[in-house]
Image (cartoon, rainbow, N blue to C red; front, top):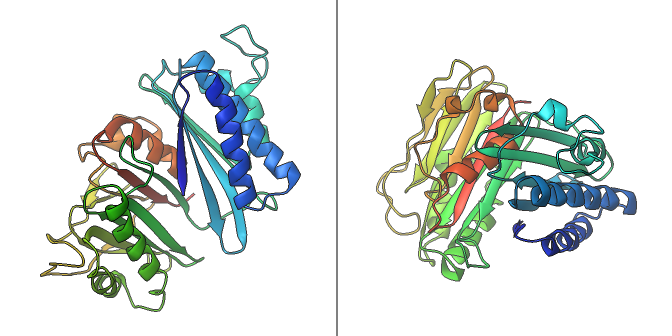
Length: 328
């Protein structure tokens, strides 16, 4: 679940704090941890209003095994900033004490940011029980068609120390009918942990989606032991594997509609490169993005990469989902 709050006026900072409190309750955070989330949201929301003339905050629950947390993603199209300077306590361009970003970094268990001429994207995470380290970073943005309360896209991941299996699904159309197809796929995906690979999973999801309108979907699996990415998709789901030498390898989905017509379901396997970045997205994200157009972005947190691609390449007439997986 992810919620978007547009910071159009100062009252929306209060709305963001109330939303943050709800996510903290969902994640069963302690009072102190919930206070950290509230401080992060207040500082980021206030910064958006003062320095970027608005922007948006995206919040979602984090979950890994028995651990839970809250992620706050700040996105704007402002003038950008010198992050090293902005993170230094006492710096201000708006006549304030200038403790905003420095305070966010201190309150968060995970923090990262990217800024340039197109604006800034900042991620802050607070985990119940304190900071944690995972085998991979996973970042995502999944928001509905403007004006819709329900998203027809969805994603889910099965995580372990040795592998990550990812589903991205785009229900046909948007609104409740599309959301039903997407949620059906997510529910079926939860029962596929013992299946041998993405091709078998896609076959299972294709069968589960028959009572629905259908969907485009893709399953990717990163095997950290064998250093291989396996991929299988049906319909218009974009996927690419980026390597450290800035080479991009597209991962192919076959034509069709999962649940109705999928004449060919096939799995591909490619090596996982050093410092690899896997990006999978619905057709609510345009395909002409290139990470090399953003110097330094590849090295940023997976959620920051997802936020930049969402900001600059989302289609405003569709649900939008982009998921990024990389090694820390």
